[in-house]
Image (cartoon, rainbow over all chains, first blue to last red; front, top):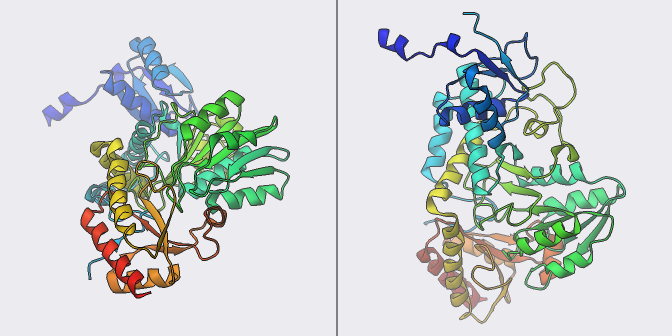
Length: 88
Length: 383
């Protein structure tokens, strides 16, 4: 049980949220970031920041520039990037 | 009696075990609706679809996987392209070798103010790029031809046509129903703007799968259907982005899971090996049939210039009767008559009786071919 908790990603460390128009891009974004060694967690899209896609992506906001570059390189189209800390 | 299945141009059989496993696995462990929710089953289904899109993109050398949109078959993909692109006053150029999946939409569009020019192929079913381009006018919007004929297997020089279309500023749509998973396709190198493919033929997926590659601005193509996409759910107008613009309603995820496994199987095998295999068997057929005087063969009759498709007739016996005997007495399953392409049969001179069409795939063996040659020889001898 303790081990499981240790492996869990601390969502509070992932203060950035990417919103998307469609789910294809959300899933591809997750895959692209993970393949490039970045942390990424799909979450239900917070309605208060976007009415669009059902899923959004949490990431380390401090690495925003790198994330944007990867999205461009791998044809990931996104709606917006927000600084939106997890409410816990 | 052992069944020899020679109707792979209609749908491939058998499928690799991995295709069946992928579909079973989806039902046992997956099962959600992709893009509809943030829970595990929905995201899991979404990942299956993403994986399939990425594999297909890799297979056809497409950089952005969202440019592959799924359909239920090549026919739906072709209809999406033709009805989405062509408007009153537009001119479209096509060939006489097209399947009804192109001919029937064009016949309908012709009645609704679209001008259609049909360029005749030669008697082997080959569409000559120069004669095709001679029909292109100032107001021509689109050239649409098949990559390979479903009647003769004749492979067209798509690269040459693509190059000329790009030079003339005309859009190029390719019907890849017979070639996806058989002839290597590179949409970039071949200058293909739109490529329609079947999932259940050369790509070894299940029926109910197919797709369209859209290489141009997606806003230039109107969707064939409108409906729920899981995205932009607060609005009642169709999304204008890929792939959602063209994927209304729940996708065939179980089929797409199988299709991805089929594509993976081919990638493991090597894309170049497939046509080589098909051509090797073609040579055996051509050699065997050349020793049977009653046989008339259609098409290029040259390895690597046609897919694993061979159309022929036996003089003195109708294709339908010969096909019936092949099936009933020898367990050889072929397609007989007109293969949904009346204009193609007129081009090669086999209208209205049609032909006997043998079409094989990667699982056919030399033994199957030798057995079939012996069967045809016996039928021809008794005619």
